[in-house]
Structure formats: structure tokens, C-alpha cells
Image (tube, rainbow, N blue to C red):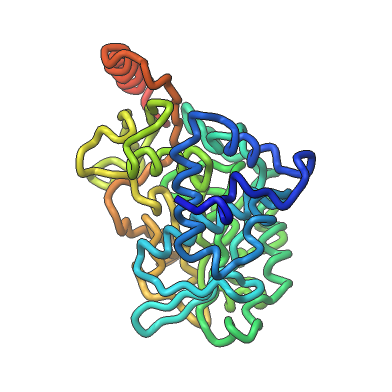
Length: 347
């Protein structure tokens, strides 16, 4: 835990009115104590020295971007990278084995609630205008040419997206895959504008891949903080849809469990993240290097995927329960969730 002089939640650099609403939510609600502990721990380990301005970053209007940056730091650290955060955009410079890569991170959309950005039941189709909007943001980032920054020049370059608007479908939003790869299955309006897809567009060869995520939320930090410290003012149930054990994405499985009660099986930072490789990249990333849960590329005009790690959720809902909730009630709630999911399997 951070000392008081560097505590992100006790020392504010902004007036109360300037604090982001979700920062105040995270700071003030008792049931988010595990998330506060984990955020403070990660900040105190290395972020504090690399990013002295992180106080203002997290507490102000860039709260979601700051939380995503902390999420990526933890994900990349778990993947064994040496991380440099002392540069301007792109913020992340990673090194592992003989490869160095730069990662430009940003968020899209707004969390549905302050706690859980992606609470879905069941998964829904991605509305086309939103997919087009995400494409527009990718092109704006492309035109900024951040791969030309001195610390990024000559290395693989990745866009990392925390997307609060789109849900995972078979590993990544299908509209996003059509937009990136192009081809006959692409949305009509996008196919007319970009027949070769984003990756086939001029300058896109400098983008080695796109890391898609929709789980860098307060709920994610709360669950991992609960598992790490096994103490909280609340109990948590997590449920949703995930990749089947046999890897068949066409028939997703369902899951439901109490956070911190799965024994040695603990939630990983990279769960649900998807790295989509650019087949035309000037500087390709080695397979299974970045640390994503799943990786996808285009082979013979078809999207192919390689699951790098075990549990891969498509959707996640976290229910907060009082600490004194009886054990029988929690078990009954889990039984009802499993029964409901069996009766209404994900599409």
C-alpha cells in the first residue's frame, strides 16, 4: 500500500469539483477497497517514478485512459516485458528477448456504469455506426504517425484500444475485423471507402497490430484486488460467456464463480485481450510476444486465431454482495445463474 504522501486517494491535486466522477466513485465506495489497494500498489511499485504526473492524470478528465495505462502496465509486466513509460506518445516502450516495441494506448466510448464497463447478457451485435466511429478514431491515430517518435522509430508499433462500446464476438468484434482486414465480408459502407481494409491503407504498414480490450474497468481491478488480498467490504460474483474448453468459438460456454473462491485458478490480467496482427506490417510482432490472451491474423483471406492462454471471456458481469451475505445465498445465486445461462446460452 502506498504511503500517505503518495496515496492516490488521499492526496488530490485537483479541487473536488474537478475530480472525475469515476475517480470519486473508486475513492469513496467501501466495496471498491480491493481496487483502491491494487491501484495504489501498482502505482507505488514503478509508475510513481516513471510518471510523476500520474496523480493529475488519474484524478482528472483522463481517468479512463489513466486506468487503462495502469491495466496495460500490469498486463505487460505479467508477460515479462521491461517497460519504459518515461516518453511522450507512444507512452509504452516494451522490450523482451530480442524485440523492442512501442504501444500507443487509448480508450473509446464511455463505461455503462462506473464499476463495470462491459456487463452483457447476452452478447449483442455491434451497431454499424459505432464500428465506423471506431474506424475513424483509428485513422486519426494513424495520421498522427507516432511510430516516427525517436524511441519508436524502427520498432514494431501497436495500437492498444480499451473499447467501452463494443463486445467481444468470437475473439474480437466482427465489424472491427472486417474493417481491419477488408475483403468481401466487410460492411458495405466501409468496403466502398477502404476495399483493402485499414491494414491495407497507406501508412498502415507501420502498425504491427491492434490490441483490443474491453475489460480495463474498475470491476477488473476490484476482482484482482479481492483475489490478491482476500479481504473486502463486499463479496463478488462474476459470470458471463467464455470460449469453450475445446476452443470452438462458434459455441461459447458460460461461467459463474465467486471471486477469490477458485483455489489456484486466479484471474489473469490478459483475460479477454485480443492482438490482431497486421499481415502487411513492416515490423511484425513475434507470435505470443505481447501477452494477449488470444491472437488473430488473416491467412488466405480468412481470419485465423491462436489462443495463447486458457480462460478467455467474451463478456463479464460482476455482482457486488454485502460481506455478511450468507454462504447459502451465494451458492443459490450461483446455481440460478448457471441455470439461467444453461437455458439461454450465448448466441
